[in-house]
Structures are given as C-alpha cells and as structure tokens.
Image (cartoon, rainbow over all chains, first blue to last red; front, side, top):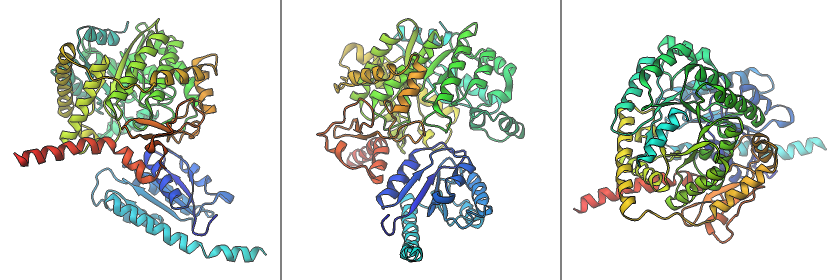
Length: 157
Length: 425
C-alpha cells in the first residue's frame, strides 16, 4: 500500500437504508488513494464492530447516515465501540444529516463527547465545507500514520 | 378481477389517467381524513396507505408504543391498529370507485400480508428483488421464499389482492431502463407463477423523455408476451431521485411525468409533491399535486388525439431487455430460482447497489445524449457504447454527484430562466 493510503471501513448505521451517500464516499476515498471496505446499508452494530477486528482492523471507520436518526444510532454504536477493549482507540468518524430538524441541534458536541474522533453534520454546515473538513481530517490522519511504516518494517527485521 | 384493477381499467377505457399519492399517518382519524381528501379531490384517484418504518421491518411493538404515546410516526401502523380497525376504516372510506393500495417496502412481508388479507385490502406492492436489494441486508433467497408465500396467501383470498411490482424503480435513479423493465417483468412473472390473477408493472421516470417512452413501450410489449393469461396494467412513478428545490422546477418535473404517462398509454401514475424532497407532505399538498397531474393529463390526452405525440427513442432497448430476460429465465426452472441464480452469477447486476447478493460489477452513467447508458456491463448481456465520450469517461465522486442531481439542475434552471424573462419584460 502506498504511503499516506488508509484502510477505511465505510458504513451506514443500523436503521438507515440510504445507499447513494455510501457509494459517493467510496468513490471519494478511492480517488484520494485510500482502500475501502463498504459495509452497505442497515448494518447491526455487531457487523460494524466485527468488520474492524484482528487482521481486518482498518485505519479509520467512516459512518455515513442521512435518515435523521444518526444521532441516536451513532451514539449507541460509538459507546459500544469505546467499551470494547480491542476497538477503544480505533479512529471513528460520523457524518451526514444526523438530526431530523436541521440547524444547530447540538448533536455534534454530544457525539464527540461519546467518543467520535470527528463529526461532520450536514445540518450544521454547508456540504462543501463539510467535505473540505473531512478531506483535511483524512490528510492529517494519513500524515500521522505514514511515518510508522518504516518503523514497523525495522522492527520486523 | 380485483376492484382495484377494475377501477383502473374503466378509467383507461375512458381515456383518463388514474393518479395516486404517497400518504401515511399514524392515528386512524388522520389517515381517514387523508384518504377522504384524496377520494374527494378533482381527479380520478386511488387511495394510498403507506406504512411507518417500524411496521415495515416487523417491529410492531415499537409502532404500538409510539402510537400509544402519541409520537409522530412516518406512516400508518397497520399491525398496531389491527385487522378490525383497518377493515372498519376501509369499509368506511374505500369503494368500487375508490380502491386503496397499502404500500410497505418490506423484504419479508408475510406478517403484513396476513393482516392485509384478513382486513380485505384491495392491493399492495413490492417484490422479491425490488424490496430486498436496495433496502437492507436480508439475503435474496430468503426474501424470494417469503414473497412466494405472500403471493400464495394473497392469491388464496376470496377476492385476491392486486399486486404491483416495484422492480421498475431500483435505487430510484441511475439504473438503465433495460434492467428496470426486465426486473419489472420478471417480478410480474413471479407473481403470476405464484397464482396472482391481477398485477401491475412499475417504471420510474428517469432523465430522458424519449428513452422513457421507449422503455414503457418495451414494458408493454413484454408484459403482453409474458403475462398474456392474467390481468395487468402499467404504473409510472414521477421521478424518485434528487428532486428540484424550486416549486417551478418540481411542478415541471411532475408535469413531464404526466406527459410521459399519457403518451406511453400508462394507466396509473404515482405522483410526487414539491414538499416531498424535504419532508412528509401535508394532505393539501398531495391534493394539489393530484389535481395538477389530472389537469395536465386531460390536456395532454386531448392534444394526443388531435396532434403529435413525442416520439420514443430508438436505442434497441426492447432487444436488450429481451436478452436479459432470456439469459435470466434459462438459469432456473421457476422464475424465483432463476432470479436468485441470475443475481448470484451477475447476469442481473444493479449498478451501484451495495447488497451482498448483487455482483456490483456494473456501472451506469448519463451519456452525451442525456440518456442512461451502461459504462460497465459486468456479467450482463448488455451493450456498453464504446464511442460515447461520457460512457468512456472515468467515474469520480464529483461526477456521480452531478449525475444524481441531473434532473434537479435541469428543472431548477427553468426557475432561473423564468425570472430572467420576467425581469426582461
């Protein structure tokens, strides 16, 4: 895998059957050189968690949801992830239309407190800015991970 | 024949397009008021009862709790109200002149079918593929078995329910029409195989009038061939993808779907309201859209009798659909087993669909002519146009977004053009 390339799990949350947002994200991440596993729509929490264990462990999990229940499903899922010793430190972000009302609904704050590494709420920011923020987050994460590769290689020798 | 199909056939015989809303409310009195308003509006209508999302997935307890607590549900909780109350509601509101369809969206609807049959519901919709692949994780063979039992239950009723396929609406947008028509016909054949005497075949408006006319003509030809011994009609859906944001753009897109329905000989149209892109529409907004569609339909039908109809495109769509049907049907002894095998081998492959039982090797784009075209065939016997620059160009996230918002842009532009014309005058 080239330096700066992340292994990313893309997924919806348990109650959300919207698919186009997941298709879009996969294309976006692959264009940026990342490697994507797309779990698709309506995954039970255990499906998302099991896709991140052992040799499958990704560098990042991206949850995308637009049905307005993301603040509920996302909160429950991130709490389960952070309670799990194997996954407690896994980078996980959530984005989309997270609430039903739109506008400043305060979900972002609550989701961050519960353990997400970043929240991209379409109800709180224009889509273009949200995507720019997401791009910046990916570059930072890739930059932080990249130097580790030679060190791992050296350790293996 | 069911009184649902009977009503549609009588209207078609008189040259009238039947129009239908999407509508579902939690409390009985609001559902009754909505149905009554649709029945009494100035249009030839059938009623709709759309179920809430708890009921759709079989979580009847959550629906019951929400109803008792007075929480807002996004549809009608069929099971929570129960057979007696539903029967009473239908007895009161529906009739030979106003049959009602229940819409659900469930991949495993056997429990819902039991209630619908017991309550004497006129009609419902869905299908083993169309309510499985786009909306969840249920394996296709399991959905197919469940739907087979549903069909047999509906067929055994004293007055068998009318059943509509949702196969012509896969993912709402960016699925080339040959595959939509093939799936619609295959699901219709699946219903017939399991004993249903009266079905309708769906198709959703896409991005090009000529291509849609060609698709609907192909759908009618193939239905006549494969469903000759049962009753059938065609249902068109106003565009289901990303909708225009302006009222003018929304009504123009709805207007074009009415023209498409009239000029293709389609019997029934399921409309969209301008509000629907953002929220569940109010009853008044639904009535407004229905009356608008009926008025446009009457005018188009009059024009059609005296002048020119827009011509269908000639892209070889019927032949491609025929090839898809033949390639599928040779894979199984029954339509159900053929459908399962065809998806397992990628002979049918819905572009962009992430379900595990879909091969996911095909891709579709909007081509240079503004029509839907394949850009990658996967394992399907379909044609990828090699000379079309748009079909050959790489698919990026930005391009996907542009294609998904193609109709939104096209129709909202008319709002801008309109305001420029007004300011010039």
